[in-house]
Each structure stands twice: as C-alpha cells, then as structure tokens.
Amino acid sequence: MEGGSRKVCENKGINGGRAPGDGGAAGEAIVYCDFFMRAALAEAARALEEGEVPVGCVFVRVESSTITQAQLDTTSSANCATLEKLIVARGRNATNRECHSLAHAEFAAVDALMRNAVACAGESGDTGKSIPASLADYVLYVAVEPCIMCAAMLLYNQVKKVYFGCGNPRFGGNGTVLRVHMPCKAGENNGVSDSIAGYESCGGYRAEEAVALLQRFYSHENANAPPGKRKRKGVLRERSNC
Image (cartoon, rainbow, N blue to C red; front, side, top):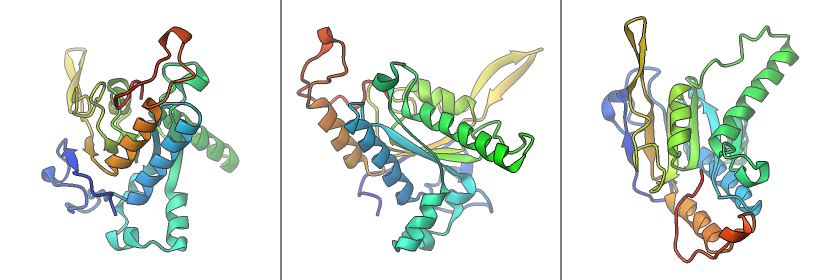
C-alpha cells in the first residue's frame, strides 16, 4: 500500500514521537494516506512531461488526514472519488516554464491554495474569514523532500505535517541536509523571544517511484538548460532544484 519503502519520521513533539497512524490524543492523530502520495507523484510525472525536474505535491486539510485506516484502505472507485475531493491544492515544479527560481512545487501549491480560497470566498460572499492565514490546517504530500528554501517557507507558514517520498541529499531541508522543520527561535520582539513550533516530517513513502522519475529526468539532456550547461547526466542527482 505504501510502496514498501523505509519510513523515516522526525517528530516535533506530536503524539510523543510515534510514527504516523499510531494514534494519540483525540484530534492529534494524522494518518498517512497513500492516495495522496500517488497524487503528488502524478503531479511530478506531469512536471517531467513538461521538461521540469519531476517534483509534485498536494495539500489536504488536517481533518481529511484523520479518516480511519479502514476507509483509507478501501480501493473502490467511489472511495477514490471521495479522496480526490479532499485534495485542496496541487503544485508541480515549473522553474523553467515560469523562468522563476521560486516556482517550486510547494510554492505553486500554496499559491493554488490561496487562489482557490479567495475564489470560494468570493462565490459565497464571505468577507475573507475563510481565507487561511497560515498552513496550520493543512498536510503536505510531496514526491521529494522539500529543499531548504521550501522547508523554511512551510515552517514560517506553520504547515501541520509533511509526508515526502525520496530524500534530497543536496538540498534537503527536512533532515537530510538541514533540519529546518524543527522548532526554532525567530528572534526577539521588545525583549520577548519569538519561537516557531516546527512541524512533523515523515519520508520514504513510495521513494522508489520518486527516484525513478528523477532518474528519467537526469538520464537525458535538459533541453531547458542554458546552451553552455546542457549535458547528459550519467548519474542520479536526486534534485537540482525542488
């Protein structure tokens, strides 16, 4: 169901350090759902088709991740349709297409999340109260471990939890290179230290599939690279940009 990969979790304190799905106090348990990781990998595959580094992600609301495991294990088409509706935003790498170094999958998904929220608020005549001020109510599924920049963006926007596929040995911000997702001090304001709680991060879900997509990208010349930098890559470099 989960691709057979070894799971690595770094916990900021939720559920006493137990792995996802182990339970805990009411309202705290966030259960991994393989459907959402497969959706993130589908976005990564779309990025590959567009000549981008194959990284994709999806956001789901926290309450969507507390569905019972029995429901998650159901593979009926009706259940899949229900899970599909729980995805509130999608994103995929578009740094070449957008000619912008910030067009990483995670940023694209946050942008889509905000656009969707604004559109829904406008349709309902909402005054803006339904537009999220942070990512505290959302869980991110991403094919590759967030880079340091994206991990910091998720930290400062208070994402609830991150599930990722393969690690990012060059730029990983969720434990492979740096532990950006861990609690930290943001500085002092009027003599009072401000702290950031951090978020829980678990990796290794369908990692082989994420690596396979990256291998397909790096085994060919990158037509979108500047002429002087175009060359065939004979070895895997898991993620040159996120």
